[in-house]
Image (cartoon, rainbow over all chains, first blue to last red; front, side):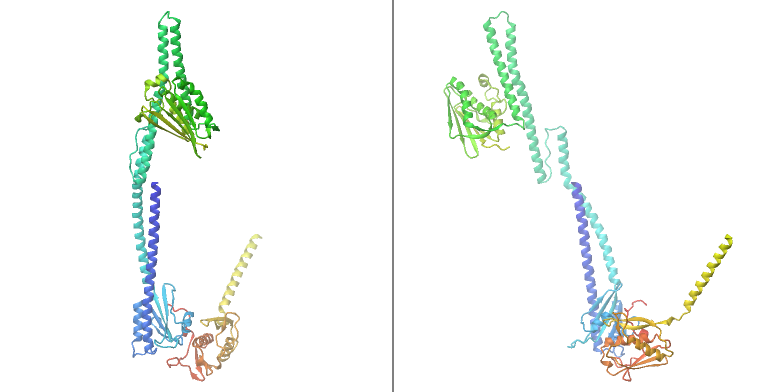
Length: 465
Length: 171
């Protein structure tokens, strides 16, 4: 980019200097020429009037017209020829052609009555042909012609001088311009280079570092965005590490219990059969638990995969919920918890049945687990033209406000002790949220500690990839 | 035999060269005025042009002058050329005396357009001064010497009395 800035600025300088200089020069030359022509014309007109005033008797010694013409020729740096209406040369300041006859196409044209001057430019000279007429005469008759042949040497010399100067100036300006272009390009890309350096450093492996915020607005914005991405990445990395350590811990715990139970069983000799049965039941329970954790982890991992294959089918959500409730009823009945299902309308949606079943199952199971005895659960289903809504409310222990953001995190438990007793892996809500998100839906929670919790899930009716 | 042939060939070459040399010399000896220019004018009457013809046969200047004037009055071959002497001009007589030819125009010549006048006279002068022994041409109208605008006689004119090309700035 530095090169692009440099070269484009340089090019711009060169183009501007060139065209500007050229047009200035041209304009000057034009003006200079016009001035010269006007000067000569005016002088010649004056002489012409003089000639008329002496009735063309130029060579008469009683008047000074001849001398005046000579002087004019000298001052203009050229030659003046005066012709009368018979095409005879009355005066020639240069070659002494007096008395000879002169004829040319231009002279003929003027004599025939064209009152305009004619200017031609033969070979480094300017030739001005002016008709001589009676000043106040009404007649159109041309009385003669005055021809001034003026050398353009002076003008040419000036032209060349100007051009030389222009060349020098152009070169100077171009050098300045190019130098400036170099500085600007370096200056502008300086900050980019800094950022680049930081990036390289981070990419090498120092992922916990952030980029220094330098540069002007646009660059700063870019860097800020980048830093936020880096932070997110870092958070992700942290949570991954946390997850891994959580997983290891959770997987290990049942193992430890199992070992303890088995060891103590082996340590004692001659124990009654009931004791063995008791210990083994506990061991089996731990194995089941470990199994659950692993199953949940696997389903979570499956859902995590970005290319999660969804088996989308038009499903009756009513039926889906009814099936879940039927299955979980015995669990609720154990603690005399009442489940009410409200369906405002029949809802059919394009969903992955397995995944959402799991999601709703977890929500309702939680509602049972964290409920009071003799409590209630209300499950409602509604829909509008775009989405369907499932609400699961309970009269349970609720979730404290400061924990509400974290409940969806894997392995997160508000009250570890209680969860152990009721069982569970700590992955339920994580799985639920994942399932909801993969359907491009949303899940929200509202809870008051001690009173109850409500989870609201919104899923689009039709699935768009 | 070979050598003889070579020598013979060589001699032939030399002979040829001598002969061609003679030929060249012969050309140089020919007179310059074997052709003459008869002057005409262009369409706008702003300059003179000419066509060449074989020299007139006449013995004396008078005859030759008459002949050449006659030729001037004939239509030129080139379509772009026109007779320099206007139709309305009547030449009373052509008199060659010593080295001057006098052309007398009929009265009325003075009414002729000035540009046509100049062209006409220029053509006549340039045509006639080619005659050996003729240096000047004089003009008269109805017997009276031709005058300029300021009342002075025009006098004898010769070839370089007419500077029709561009006025030169360098000598």
